[in-house]
Image 1 (tube, helix red, strand yellow):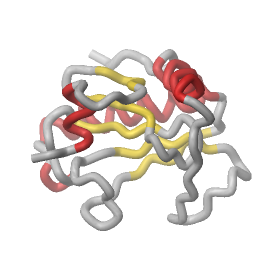
Image 2: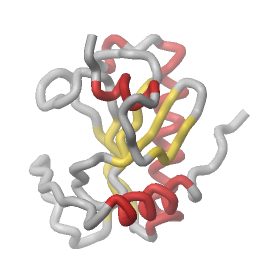
Image 3: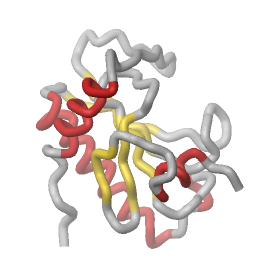
Length: 140
């Protein structure tokens, strides 16, 4: 199987990592809705939410919750948008949670997701560092 996100997890595909934990990995989306947009994945290959083992659900959602807080603390956003697709509109068939920084009046409407780009790898690294530095440690 050739899965882009599995290659990111195993380190053979570079990514701007913001969360690196035993069961999950969070990294910047290369085509973000807004700069700082993170994709959170389970380290094991799981195609959809329906396929996620039950014991990983609280781990994945706990990490998503902490990343949502990091959008505010690390990027100064007012909040976040947290979402996932299952099969339809899922561009990579590996479960991933989108955690997107939001600010009132940012132009995001409904489920139309305009995309942007980073000006350079250095800018992406700066956003990754800002989010990573604001992610609290897991509880427990």
